[in-house]
Amino acid sequence: GIEGRPSNVIFYATSNRRHLLPRDMIENERSTAINPAEAVEEKVSLSDRFGLWLGFHKCSQDDYLDMVRGYAKHFELEIAEEDLRAKALEWATTRGSRSGRVAYQFIQDMAGRLGKALD
Image (cartoon, rainbow, N blue to C red; front, side, top):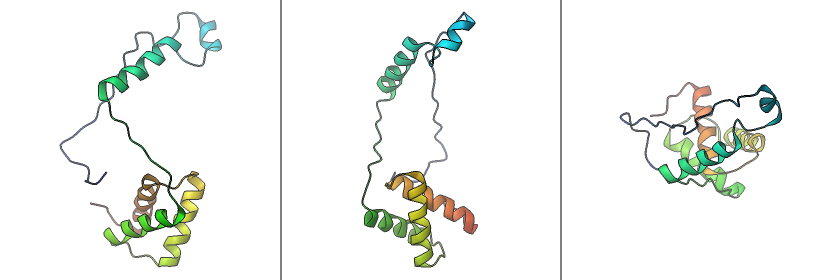
């Protein structure tokens, strides 16, 4: 997001499931979902209720590194440019993605390693 996390907001997620476990033990062993029909209903219900879709789109390596550098500068992280680049690329590779979300997660991790709180 473009704003920090407000201190006066809490997110709750609820479930509409009525049956947490199938009644027969053999059904537990056969099925992958607790109750397949209710699993689908729950996903549709959450989508309808909250109606918020977030996209974390992939970007080029240069755009990803620009985001990382921007975050590092904004949060005043003291790390050499070459180290920041190498660690950011390693982070993206191990996560299998390059996006704004991955860049911010990397910066959060790096700030923790450097002992710097992000405000």
